[in-house]
Image 1 (cartoon, one colour):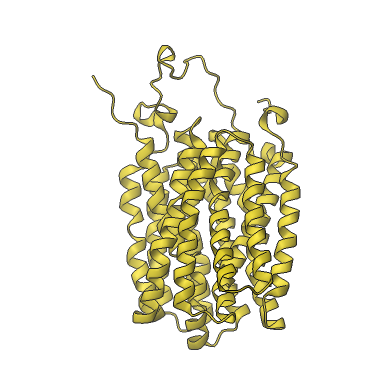
Image 2 (tube, rainbow, N blue to C red):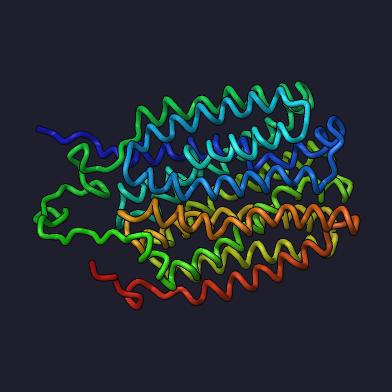
Length: 415
């Protein structure tokens, strides 16, 4: 009797789409709404950046609780609920007449929703379905984020020109609903629940499958995670990088407008840059299964720092375009390597909890970065000080990542 096809790759494909929708409708196109909202509701650059700062604060804060939930309950139910909440949040935003209403709907409702149906649940369920091929699988699924940017960012620019910001948000509300049926159809918590094995192995040691005598994987408690040097060095180092990336992505469209580029031009350019993140995600994900994850993270970090240094020079058209594309490509490599590194250091059984706790550590950086960038722009009238500060932050992040020790040196705590 033939065995059913390995479900893990269907889960990867579903994760590709779900992440593309969740991030492609929120973080990536956020900056495109700056000018329309400032003209309609009279918000300053700094006030507008409060939305993405609050979003990051709530999303990472909620992630600590969602991560535990993902390790103990139905992942597909969590993702479907997040899809419905994201749709409702976009629709509520389209009806807002005050900035605080937008902040509440996007910064709270939308943020909690993305923590439930975006990268956290996708990487968690993939970590449970893959072991040897974890980095590559996470990389394939994470390609959905740049793919979502390629498709949805230009679409957002087009909709803003034709429907206005309210009509665009209502369209986003409908797109967000697509996550729920996909998750319910494809996602299952573990391969064992379907009688399958991680990576699609046969389960027969004579055929190269898993051995029935393999030890039970150690599950880290919250206390043990928080006592780990690796956890803190990785969480703070990557938190700085992700925080700067969030802050700059939210301000990049306005920076482009300061240099004389139109909103539609920036929408198309950012979409292309997000698209370049797709091959980077695949490449870095595959490399993460074979090479030092610390070095790969620092390599991606160096690419983004180089792009910001180029922006600081107020470059010509060609260099500006190259900087935007380099920033997008380098950013695409961060997520799969980070996820693979967490799995390698702490194991699949603790993945959701570790990612959630790491989100709490990263929270201040993601919250402060867009606010600082917007405030410096309001005070000085340019982004030069912001770019210099962000480059310095990348140096600190790289130094912290060098403190992470490989699992063989760290050892596994004893139960």
